[in-house]
Length: 187
Image (cartoon, rainbow, N blue to C red; front, side, top):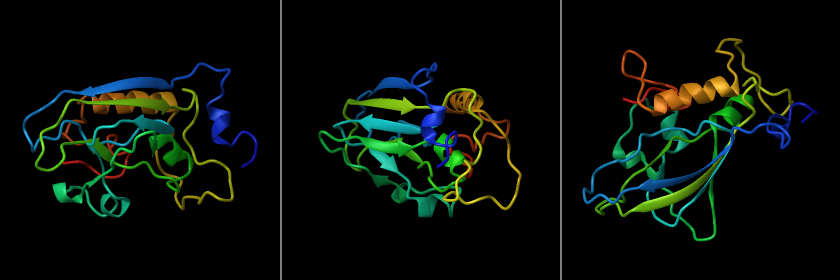
């Protein structure tokens, strides 16, 4: 990719970073059918998740792209592997690659028939610099959109919008595409 169009050009080590390192704790729950986390896509570039406790679930792309509502049986578990991380592509990378690389809809839930044990995970969330415009990068490897529609937004504005949705401040009709990275409505 040409200079100024590579991912590292938007996450420079000598600039203020909106990256965060987060420890997540899910309290133990004896109910076996509760989903403790809202399904969402990650908002930044890449997220590295470390955990030894089962519970991470992902919705396969072929299902996420065909439906706007999902059944419990559609979700797949990502089993933790000691000494390894799960790497999620975030919405910013998805937007900058015009959907070539996609952010996966995921959540943390109980394993069927089991109570949720106390669960910890450590997540490092990489994000482009706040002023980065989330537009398709100039590369022959990235497909161009046939339309010029869509909202032009900076990384900082996208992150603010996403946090608002994740904190439950939905749009007026009770649905929010921001949670799902712009592709579909969660009902």
